[in-house]
Each structure stands twice: as structure tokens, then as C-alpha cells.
Amino acid sequence: MKFTHKQLTPTKRVCLRLKEAREAKGMTRTEMAKHIRMSKEHIEALEECQFDMLPFTALYQKNLIKSYIKTLDMNPKEFVNQFIHEEIPHTNKKTTVPQKKSYHFSFPNLPLVIKAATIGIVFFACIGYLVIQVKHIVEPPNLAIYSPDNGSVTTEGSTKISGKTDPGVQIHINGRSVMNREDGFFEETIPLTNGVNTIMLSATKKHGKTTTETRHVVYKKDQPILSLK
Image 1 (cartoon, rainbow, N blue to C red):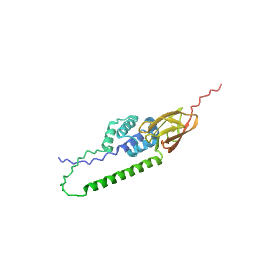
Image 2: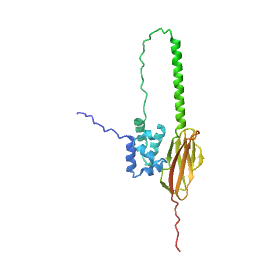
Image 3: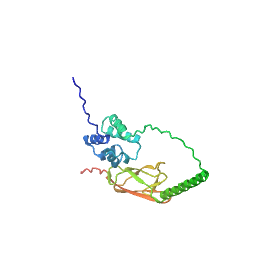
């Protein structure tokens, strides 16, 4: 009896399998984003294999995939293991450093050379530091809004606003100061009025540079049923 080796078709990347699983369940990206409390843009980045566009650690991304699959009533173990195997880099390669032969040379002016090199290194280090500080002062802060989506419609009387800015930056929502964590992440829930709500967000550095973002959220209050007598 002869045995033949069967060529196995490589498994699709985990991000593509996530998308196929969601579509098979008939769920839209907007519905998935609402279930796991993420923005639609992050769901799109996850399904398009753009993991570097997600502002989260690999551990958080793994938990995100687990929540995604559980929402579809599927076993997340296989998807999580594939994500770890494909997307988390392994840098455990050992490198060997070849031994170099040592040579002895005589430099009669070696102290002067060392002194001049030290002064040069300190000078350029100071210049580099000043350039970085000036750039930090002149550039406006980063401001990324995770939720809500602009133009979203809700029947709830409040909405959660979350996002991230640079550390040490002051966040204001509609003119009111909001606390943010040391890494710049912030989250706040604000009430909505019936109709279109304009939400103004601003991130301000201590030197005065400001970045602003605007979100519009439509609140459709449930109308009571009137009975005719």
C-alpha cells in the first residue's frame, strides 16, 4: 500500500475568519461594535488585519477577539490561538557575537581627543534635546475619539464618550473639564437632548496648543402611544 502526502490548504488569517463568521451570522459591523462597545472603525481595522491601527496592547487585542467570537456564540479558543501564532511576534532568536582581536595603539594626544569628543557629544545632545522640546511645545496634541461615531443615532438618553490624547493634556467636553488617565485615555458619559446633539471635544497642552474634534449624535426619544377615545 502506497501512502501519499496530502497538501493542506493554509488556514485563512484570523482577521478574515472573523469577518466571515460575522457575516455568516448576518450581523453588521455597527451591530458588532455596539455589542462589544467598540467603535465601528476599530471593528473594520480588526477585520482588515490592520492590528497596528488598534491603539491597544496585544493582550487587549486577544481579549477583543475573544469578546468578538463570544458575541457570535462560537468557541473563541481556536481564533485566539491563531491570533497569538500569527500576529504576536516572537523575538527569541539567539545571536552570537564574534570575538574581536584586540590591538594596542599608542596615542600621545589621547586625553585631548577624548575631551573634544565628550564636548561634541554633550553639545549635540543638548541641541537634540532643545529641538525635541520645541517640537513638543509647537505641535498641537493628538486627540483620537473612539466613541461615539459621528452621526450615530440612539434612543438612549445618554452617550459614552471615550478617546485618547497625549499624557498631561487637559480634556474638555462641551467646555467642561474631564479627568483622564496618566496614559491619556479618557471616558465620560453625558446626557442627550431630543434631536441632534453637538459634542465639542478639545485637548489642550499646558503651553496653550489645542486640538478640537466634533461629534454629532442624534437622540430619538421614544414617542408614547396615544389612545383615541
